[in-house]
Image (tube, rainbow, N blue to C red):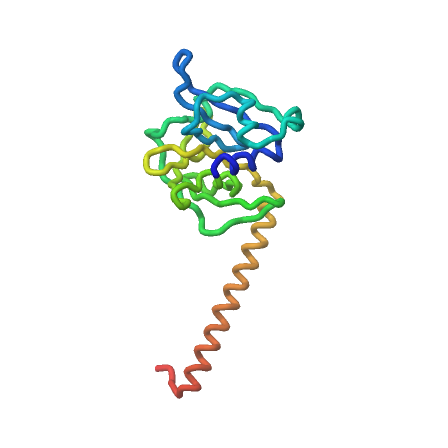
Length: 205
């Protein structure tokens, strides 16, 4: 269930925020801010931050440990609309990366690769996990990601900045190791091919 996956993001931090868009006293849209993700809440009546803890199944005797607040939208930092005229499609790199106990999904954007904790993608797994990702840019020139099913926004994700010299040193070492392994594989394949030719009596022309 989407709410349970959002709750799983919030529980380590014991914090959740409710973002509401309203016209006068009428609430038009509600969103849950969970860590570095923002997810729309659909199909529910207007709720308050305390009721989020009920949805998260947080026991009454543990709610004092939590921070649950209502926040206004921050249009300088993100656009909650289904469409953004400047958004561009991005693509997932087909492998994950574990660092510091967290698994990251690399996303290829117009500015290189962004690293997104995989748990932030969990609430987006609707319709069999099919969704499209787009990059958007805020007023500060920062990239963030918008996930959509069709033309409907399913969430906003803000990448985590883990790129330090230590990280880059480890990644370069990993890449060099992969290169060595690849070269070894190609060499072994060539030896096997040559041996197969000899066994079959095939001479190179």
